[in-house]
Amino acid sequence: MNNVKISPIFYMGNKKKLIKKGLTDLFPKNIDTFVDVFAGSGVVGMNTLARTYIVNDEDSHLSQLYNLFASYPADIIVDRIKMNIEMYCLPTERTKRNQYADKAKIEEYKKAYSRLRDEYNANKDIFDFYTLMFFSFSQQFRFNSKGEFNMPYGMDCFCDKNIEYIENGCEYFSRPNVKTICTDFRNIIAHFDKERFFYCDPPYYNTTAVYNENDGWTDKDEKDLYYCLDAQNYYGAKWALSTVLENKGKTNPILEKWLSENDYNIYSFDGHTYSACGKGNSHAKEVL
Image 1 (cartoon, one colour):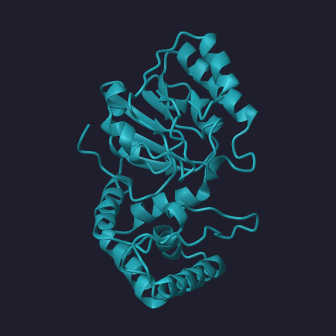
Image 2 (tube, rainbow, N blue to C red):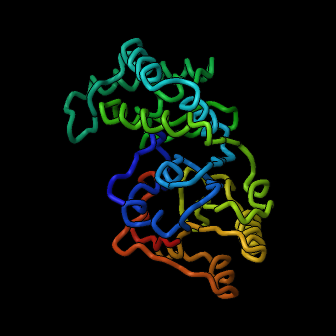
């Protein structure tokens, strides 16, 4: 698929490259309900044809972003972002060090970003949160134990392409046949329904990324996911799992054991390299 709709949510492990390499072409035809169990940016659902969609992620901050695009038209979101940029004097151009020589100006932008971050942490305005993501490191979000956004400044900016992506998000999440929920994956795939196709893109057990820091994804989670998929298979439901067989020489013994005990089809994407938030996972073997 060459004409990929890009999500307005920046999230590690985004599948847009794999979609271009045929990820969604491997899905069943005539899907009744597409269940995006670990939706992340939502880009897979945006590029999958189905009658209805269930978009789930346990991360409440992602759920807030889904609701943002479902509740507001694109022009309102764009206007609020531009208002924040002007109000806080955030950059209107990329300020990566190898492209931007004015170090004093960069320091001013860092302070501007910190002011907006402080404002968001004090008032939790969803437009402030989304604006922060355009300027945070790797355009990602992370929160500390107090629930405070703590990603450092990342020297990016808001550009015209982002407006197109926001329009994509508003069109998708506002559809009457798209339902967004926020719950543990076990609550989703513990129900057996042959009319549903379950797509799982969980945190990768053998990679390093913001979403699986501090025991965000445990041995139990990994084993429970495989148990649920086996049960779905037993009852005749359809599913697909994105995962990584090996990353920088590190394998996943739980995955290896599960695959050795089952006869599931495995599809690779030749030439694709996986990258999660700049962690350098360039030798990961990502498969479906």
